[in-house]
Each structure stands twice: as C-alpha cells, then as structure tokens.
Picture 1: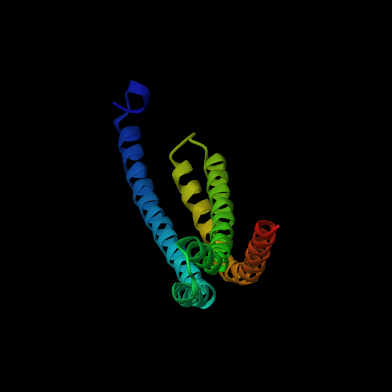
Picture 2: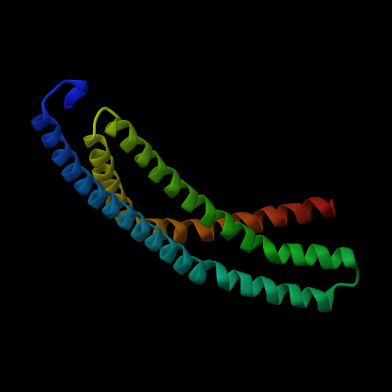
Length: 177
C-alpha cells in the first residue's frame, strides 16, 4: 500500500529494504554499544579490585590482627567492643573513600548517558544510531578515565584513613573527659 496508506508499491518496497538495512546497521551498532559497556564494566571492576587489594586489604588484615589482640587485652565486654571498634575505623574510612570515588565516577557516566539520550531524541529511525554512537563515545571517554579513577582512589584512601583515625582519637578524648 505504500506510505501513509497511499498507493505506490515501489515506495513500500524501497522503504522496507531501507528499513531492513537500517535495522541491520542499528543492530550492529547496538552490539558495539553493548560490548563497549561490558568492556567498561570490566575495566572499572579491575581498577576497583586492584585498588582494594592494594589499599584496603592490608588495612583489613591489620584490623583483624588488632581485633585479635583486643581479645587478649580487654578485661570487659565494653572494653573489647571499644577496642575492636577502634581497630576497624581505618578500614571503614578506606571503604567509604573507595565507594565515594566510584560513586562520583558512576554519576559522571550516568550523566553522560542521559546527555546521549537527550541528544539522540526520538524523531526517526536514526535516533537509535545516534544514541549508540554517543554511548560508544562516552564509554570510550570513561574507559580512558578509569586509570585516573585508580589514582583518585589511591589519593583518597590515605586521607580518609587519617580522618577516621583523627575522628576516633577525638571520640576517645571526649569519653575520657
């Protein structure tokens, strides 16, 4: 029947083959976008795992050894609880720093994806291709920023640990007064 219910089989045939070609191209573009998302997720997980193993796990080890020593040195349950809590403050600070750094990175990526959706619009078949191209570009930019995220975490963890220790020491001083 053709465009908008009017005659013209050649227009209908032409639009069908054009749509099939566009659909094939769009599917390939979508697969590329999905592959880029998977690669980006893997890069992020690898960076966070590496930073955690290098920066947080040693703190966890010390916290566990410290807690074991608390079991030997505490005379009451309250002393034991306070001692063990003091042991975990650096770990909690480090974990919070990692979570905050990753969260900021993820919010940036989400904002980039939302921007892609706004830019792509929904006016025609090419909006899907525009969205996929924008997502691919954003994924590449953010994949390139993953090493910087690792550096940000490496800078944030020692600061957070120091702040956690200072906070704990302040609490101890307040309890003594």
